[in-house]
Image 1 (cartoon, rainbow, N blue to C red):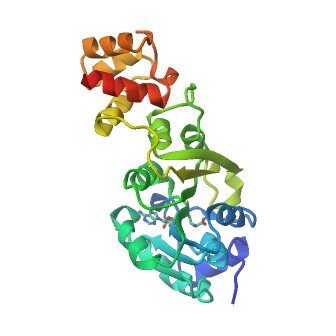
Image 2 (tube, rainbow, N blue to C red):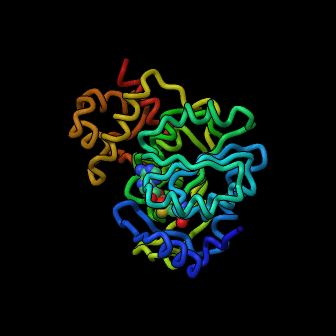
Image 3 (cartoon, protein in one colour):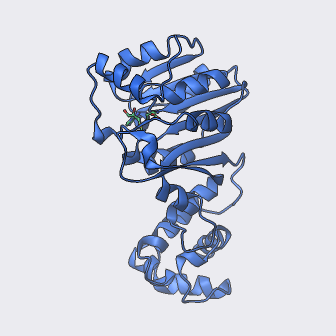
Length: 285
Ligand code: SAM
């Protein structure tokens, strides 16, 4: 039996039959809008795609993905959702659920074991807000063999992650994401599209993973330390922020900026990713 899993009445009935109550600490806000999940699924997957979903809840996005993708593996932390998901996903034989913490799950292994017959792999999720950044950064940094990450996050995070570089909206996470992926803000999802309704709006963002990291630097770890240090004190100049963060000395960074012809009073948000790369390489000389 197929359920309208976005329907508030259906959600309430399924949850009350299972004696389920929402845990705010797990970021449990379930979608109640019929249009969001089909749009996310269509952006993330096609019939050749194996999809990893994070946090299926009662399976509203999972069911859409199951109808579009070749295979879906959903990872859910909350065991209390098991009896509900067994009901709601019963009709989809290309879909399975693993009950585990996504941050402790070996996604490389899942991809190798479950998606060997899929031409591409995607991650698609309405992410639990309390761990949005750790999940996105772990996905990007682990260099999984994936085509895209299509996720719903808080609107503010989506704007930061997809910000044009350079611009005032840029943060360290923007540059880190741009290092690994092409970023695109897809659409807004207002707060009234969920039960319970969160006190912030959301948005869907897509990362298309660069097959080969575009920017080549001598020491990637130094690049990321430099980026984090540069944005640690947003009101300071890059020189003062980086040196206060203890990444490199004031003299080193000033000399590097001078060699590259960049103003000594530049702020982190005014540099491109390529300029940060050149700066990291110059500091090493
Ligand atoms: N996909 C559903 C929807 O769109 O209605 C639910 C999304 S809800 C925002 C986030 C889901 O992530 C919840 O089901 C929650 O239990 C689950 N979750 C929270 N922390 C998790 C973790 N560390 N690993 C896996 N799932 C997690």
